[in-house]
Length: 266
Image 1 (cartoon, one colour):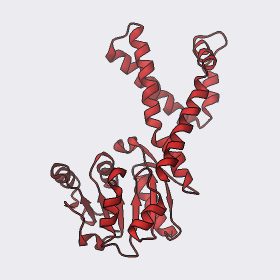
Image 2 (spheres, rainbow, N blue to C red):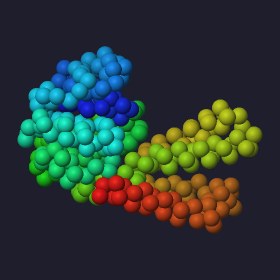
Image 3 (spheres, helix red, strand yellow):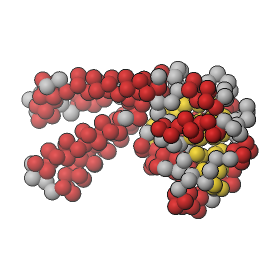
Image 4 (cartoon, rainbow, N blue to C red):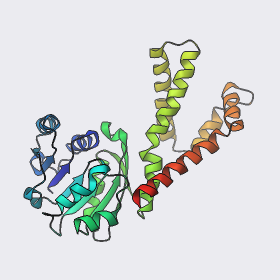
């Protein structure tokens, strides 16, 4: 297969780095299009891929085109791409809020895949979910699965609405995680720990808890209950969270994120 990555920012560069581990994809069959000379040269040198500054007729020689740019500049880029696209080419978009219908209209193209990756893709520990138009066949969807599995984990959605739902869960999820980690760290510092010790305490606690959850394969509620002894310290904190309706507030916040994702996609 031959792949174009349009955009060499954090996410585009991370995806390029991750797919270097896919044996069936030669760097010489990857073309990076990035206008920033420093980013373009650094990524091309590190990966061995081809690179160029602008979108032009060269895109016609590739099978898959991954759009990894900010959604604010999407329309102009889509209109430019449409000049050279061929019917067999598959468009892969990781742009939040740009629907398949919008891309199809602007590109005059039917083979389109939307993917929602998240920030841990930067260390090949991302969570991605994708949905494709009806024109994308199983073999082509398998390629998408392979590409984004190299970036961490990947699942296929049953409908496009799931992309907006995933935006609120896994896409925005790292932000919720860092918010919670920030507050625990602030608490540790207020209790007398140095900033470095507080960071270590919280990082290792959260990392270990996540690995334990993953290894046990059981619902988080079960694990939560196991560490919540009657009359103990954990339950004292959890009872307070419940009295302040923290759980309800989290669910409401995630619903707000989902509604915003739907607004952006409309």
